[in-house]
Length: 193
Ligand code: SAH
Image (cartoon, rainbow, N blue to C red; front, side):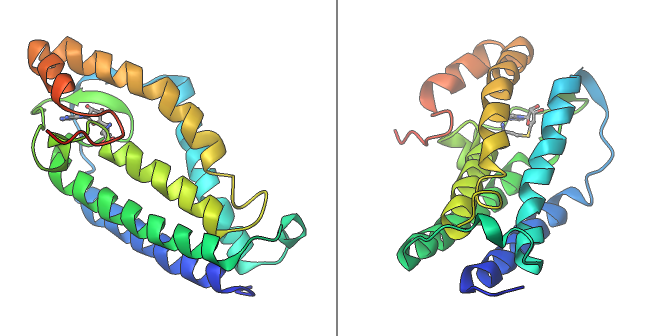
């Protein structure tokens, strides 16, 4: 347990990310969907995402996964720390600006509004970008074939399956307004006008 510095730093940042998410989602549990795109695949992949995020804790608090460690220079781990902090900031901004429109599964809620301001003025999927940065940071900080790669291995396929469906759902709901919004923003890489 905690036998290398990145295990400790990872745990602290993980808890920070967890708190950010909880602060925004704890008071926003009741959702009334008018459109719900809840597929068994999406739910399964969401579960796998969760497992991929939690495996590092098994690594941090135990030594059972240490057999899969590989050597890596320290600076790579510190680059991961910087990336994880950026991911947390992005997670915070996306939750703050998306507000009650957020939901873990894809859907349009009763009072859904299209958000095109704040961080969403530059990037359509800042929350997925935050998760991607998180997954890369995990890989850079935890030099272990299992704990380092457990999130990115699920997160990328899930993102690829989900993002097109989500944008189609937004087009179906908001039509030209969303199409115009797509032209001025980047998908996961911000577009600055
Ligand atoms: N893909 C976004 C949001 C993730 S939460 C991101 O990465 O930041 C998923 C829900 O957000 C979807 O069900 C969709 O209804 C909603 N959503 C996505 N983009 C939105 C936007 N620009 N305005 C309002 N709701 C949005």
